[in-house]
Image (cartoon, rainbow, N blue to C red; front, side, top):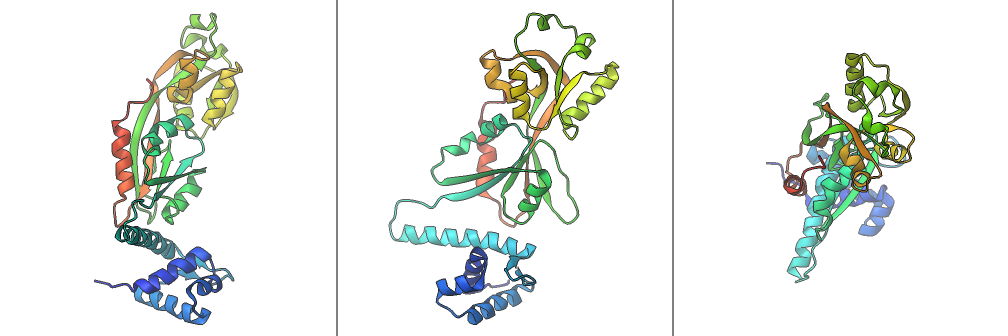
Length: 299
């Protein structure tokens, strides 16, 4: 079994956090050359480079990013142990970093994450972005989890874990209007001003297939990737929107919007994407367990 020099690992951890040898050497009260030698010794023991030294600023290699992830956990636990030995009652807060695909419903995110928001020992970091960017950050251990409305399979050497969290039927919603209550589906669908998800959405793919089967040419007035924007446009009466009910749950409750039609064959799926790690993340396991114990999404 390989044995790591924890002194060298701590030196690497500080250098990676500082981004340069000079600042880290100053904190450690070491010469820059001495610190550089010890980082090299750690790399030799691991058998691969931790930093890309091609630029003036030290940049982590993909392997270095993985080592940093584990070093962060090791030294956070070490600090917690020191506080426990000293009799301090307070525990360190575990940082759990979640990436959320920018097209994902904010209401769904809140529903899913709510069980963890009251845990005193947890510090949530929630960031949004495009799918490719978030997966890249997940692979380099800058994120612990990605929430998405699109699944992903194994790609190349990446060992993704994709778990379905929830599934919800898509509905057509609009402002209360007596004339809309008399609509006949699918016959009258073509005369509505439709607000639809963008063409990269799984919902849109399903809708387009349904329109073709019904032989309907839809009157699309806007294509919007952001579910929150679709909600606002429908709420302001600019058209009727095809969305999962969780997106407009508050507006439905307050009768600012009403359901005009349920597309019984069209669903929005929600996924959690992680990458295989040598050690299971207890926060992720707890999050899944508590989330599945919550009330289901609005029907």
